[in-house]
Picture 1 (cartoon, rainbow, N blue to C red):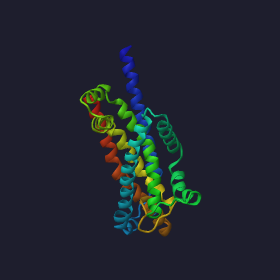
Picture 2: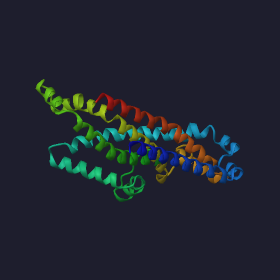
Picture 3: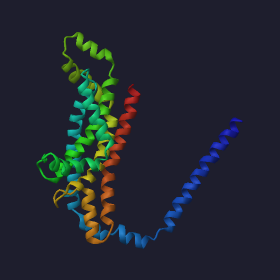
Picture 4: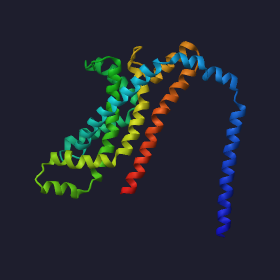
Length: 263
């Protein structure tokens, strides 16, 4: 019976490989490569994108991501601490913020910061449309990171807090010097994934409006495709996204495995 089970499993794997090869081969053979290459893999169009797609578009994408991540992490720490607070209004505020900005699409949040706040409350973020878009990203990122950070804080053994308090450390010092450093060590992999998600969400900054020098990858590629009536710019932008995100996702997976072995 055991041999039969192994045989069935082996046949199942072979069948899956065969189906995959057949589908992949069909896709290769059925594609109109001359037409596809002309429309999406045109080397002349791709060459015309450089160096601006690197020095402007990719640079802006990384800058928006880093600012959004740093701002989201700082605000997320505050929200996580408030949600764990013994003061009920603090918990209400943190919970409301987290649920609101996790529930709303990032596009609507950026739209609200760029247009609804100035019209409704007279609050206008200085720095232009790009800055308003980044503020919207910070608000969204903070809601997601707050839950990750809260989980990291609660994962730290209570004995660490009790030991630090027995040494005379105040609750604030205990949180920032004992609990948070250990909590962040635990949540590095999910925070890396949040960075990758935020990198892709920078493509939504366009809703606030952009200038020629503030465009990120997606907006740059879209404008270039419209100007040339060719989709090569979108393919190049996609490749640049992958060049950045794939090493980050591999890093997150490696960190997760390493931390699992240590635990």
